[in-house]
Length: 189
Image (cartoon, rainbow, N blue to C red; front, side):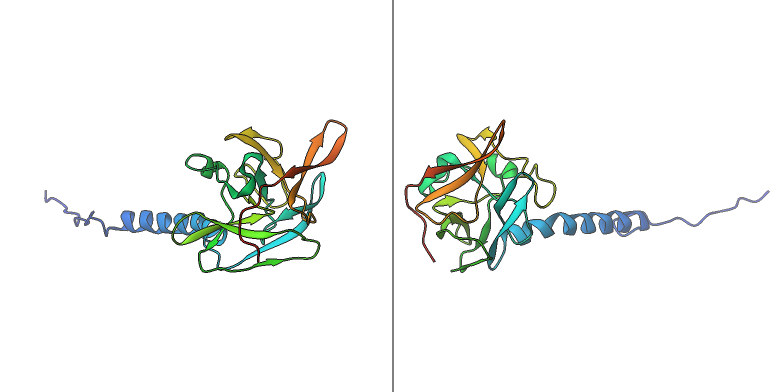
């Protein structure tokens, strides 16, 4: 009897299995990075007013993601850093951005606070703005009223033109509006 030999298949980094794995990994990283680039690498920002369930006229970003403030960050004094940023991604723009586009019914003082040498965070009435990782899509409000990272997280009313941040505060009987005094800060544009 003669032995049948099968050809030996090269199983290095460029073998069929690894090519498939690299392709899947590359596609997955592209899908994961797209939201990060649009949220944190924007060349400009747009703030809009939208009706989030239970909160008429809430401030949202260009993707209709609800925006929040941390009550202890008045005067653009950043408290959310490190682990906080994975739960509360800041609304960032490139350092070269000098203005923010405001949609209809958005009235407030827009400014920026530096986050790094290449990025800065948008502020609204001197409060830095964030989205919430627990909101899996647009027009959600799962972050409202969470006490964490040295303060309480609130949605912001888009039509709050004053030196204070007007926020929503949900009471057991319905939605009420609360004003938090601000301490200045930020750069108005």
